[in-house]
Amino acid sequence: MKAILGFLILPMLYHNSTTLSPVCDIADALNGASAKGDIIIGGLFHLHTQVESITNSTMLDLKCIKFDVFAFLQSQVMIHTIEMINKSPLLPNVTLGYEIYDTCADPTTAIKTVMRLMDDKSDSAENCIPLKCSYTNYNSTVKAVIGESHSEISIVIAHLLSVPLIPQISYESTSEILSQKTRFPSFLRTIPSDTYQSKAMAELALHLNWISVGAIGSDDEYGKYGVESFIDHAQELGLCVPFKEIVPAYMFREESSNHQKKIAEVIKNSSAEAIVLFTKPENVERIIQEAIKHNLTKTWIASDAWAISTKIAQIKGIETVGKIIGITCRRQTVPGFKNYIRNLLANDPPDSNFLRQYKEHYPPCSKKTEPNIQNSLTNTNSKTVNVSQCTDDNFLIQEIDTDIFFGVYLAINAVAQALAKLLRCDSTKCDRDFSFPTWEASNSPLLFLLITLFKLEIHVPMCDT
Image (cartoon, rainbow, N blue to C red; front, side, top):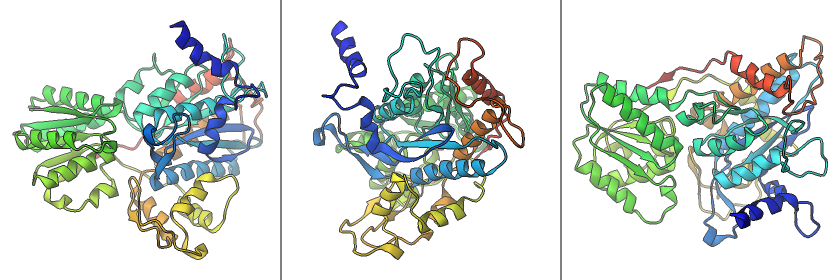
C-alpha cells in the first residue's frame, strides 16, 4: 500500500522538476478555448467521443478520436452566453472569462483537465491542484465548472471538485446518484434526474396497456441505475419486466458482436411488448443494427440519451424494427445563438482550438483550397458528412435546430446570477472583491455561492414523450 501511495503522490510533489514536464501540461492539447477575465468559469465538453485503444498509443499520450459536432456546439453556447452576460448590466464592473477543455468522453482524460482547472491562483509556481493538508485559503483560478454531459464522468470529477467545494453544474448528467448531496456537495444540474424519466416510461407503458416491458441498460451510472429505477416504478404499477440486460458501457468499442447477439436472442425469445433502452447512442446503434439483422420488431422506449439522435434515426433499415418512442425534455431556444454561429464561421476568433478542429474536419466552402483525402467522418448525434467535399455554413445552423443546448445556457446564467448576489452588484458596480478563495473557515464566499445556486429558481423544462 505504501508503494502505491508513493507512486500517486510523487508526481504532485515533483511536478516542478526540471527533468519532468509539469503534470497538468498534459491538458494543454485538450484546451479548446479560453478568454481572460476577472472571474473564470471552467467548461468540460467531449469534443471527441473516445480515445484510441492503449494498444495503439502510449499510456500517457492517448489520442482523442471521433470529433463530435454536437459537443462543439455546446461549447460555443457557453462562450456565447458568457459574452452576452459581459455585455449586460448584470455584472457591471466584472468580466467573466473561461477555460474550456475536451474530456474526450473519457474519465481519465477528464481528471487531467479538472486538475488544470483547479490550479492555485495564489501560487504562481503551481501548475495544477497542489497537495495540501488544508484548503482553507485555497484560491482556485476557476470559481465554477460547467459539465460534463456523461454521468460517469460527472461523478468522477465531482469527487475532485467537492474537496475545495468548487461548484459544478452539469447540463446533461441525469444519474440519480448525483442527487446524493452528502457524496457530491458541490454538484448541481439544469436537467431532471433519471427518476423522472424512468417514472414517465413506466406510466407510459401502463397508459398504453402494456403488460410486459423488457429493460436494457449499460454498465455505468447512467444505464445501470436508470434501468433499476424503471424496474422499481414498473413493479409499483404492477407491470411485468421479463428481463433485465446490462451491456458493457463501451460495447461500441468492441470488435466482437457477442453482446449484441446475446441481446438479440433475449429479445427474440421474450414476450415483452416493448423494450426500454437506457444507454449511450453508440451502444443503441449496435443493438438496433443487430435487431435489423435478425428481423426483430418491437416497440422501443428511448431514454433521453438517444431519443432525438439524428444518427440513430438515419440507421439504414431502422423503419423495420418497429415503433420508437422517446423521452426527452422540452427545450427553449438560446437567444441569439444562430447569429453567433454565423458570425463565428465568418471570423477566426483567437484561442479557439475547438473551432480550428471543426474546420479541419469540416472545411468551409468559402476557404477551401484542396479536397480532404479522407472519405467520410461520422460524428455522434450528427449527420455523416463526406469531408472530401466542403461544408456549407448552414450545416451547423441545421444542427442547432435538432439538438439540445438550453441546459448549458441555464448553467452559465445560474452562475452569473449567483455571482451578482455574492459580489453585491447593482446596475452600476459590484462592491465585493471578486478574487475570493474557494474556501474560508468562516463566511466562505464560495460556500455562499453554492447556497445561492441552490436557492436560485432555475426553471428546468418539463419532460415530454
